[in-house]
Length: 398
Image (tube, rainbow, N blue to C red):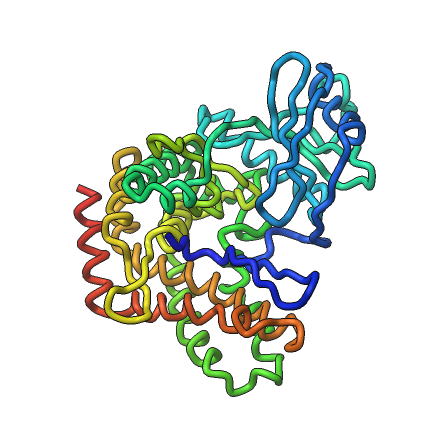
């Protein structure tokens, strides 16, 4: 089951691998995967718990940090994330935003743990982030939830796929409802705000035409077929985002794809959302549309294109609307927001592999990876597809 998110690992040259995702997350400094001994993790863990660290197991997955399952002498288990490439203040802002979910009663995700009072300075700006890593890399502790990645469960147990998507939809809706707010309230937030701090696939950079400027300044792609396509779709994106003041705001996951969700391998029931690095205050519709474009496409039985998977889409929306009914404005603009979420992902792939990286470093599969998402955008622009999705949205919203 293709999640539609750029998760592929491309082997291009010996000892060189590329992992392409939809975008860089936050103010990245560098990206590296490191390994730590148990002794090296002790100073970090001691900032959160007085209990002795007795075991650490490295967890693999993701691309922006080193993750460890840690077991303490008192029987408790946590996840320790070493955030390679993040600035400490960004990591703290991310943790503070995710922590608000827990404070609002939401528990269907891995939540950051506050450091012990005895380890805090009175005016410390870092209540969640530790700087005790051997190289000073920011780190933080998260609650541990057992489960299997949802995309793996759907792939290996397709009979559970609809239940998995219903659970994802319900969990996402509860997240959105936990800390909902108006546009005016969001403007005053001390949490991560997509308009100025990143998040929501960096859609604000699209609105402000920062990405367009990058594309237009690159002479090597002058005349490329993608450029007129992007300019046309960007105008539609800007038009849709101009509605932002009329949309419900709240805490969004930012990366709600099936590989960022844990579920039961036996039933498909939701365990927790993980990888909350993209969490921010933003339009709830954007987050739901992102989930739909990442989880609900399948290969067409007729040609080499991809089409909406009606069963999975209906399961996702059914689960969501049971917990949080879609307001009329969100129903009316669901398809356009699917398109603009796809455009953010599509554009990131194009810029990354056709502008930022040199030709001799990039395999053709990566350089042309934007086409998969461009075709989805074109498909959603078709009358039949649009009508089908609009009818499903209407049905699930009743």
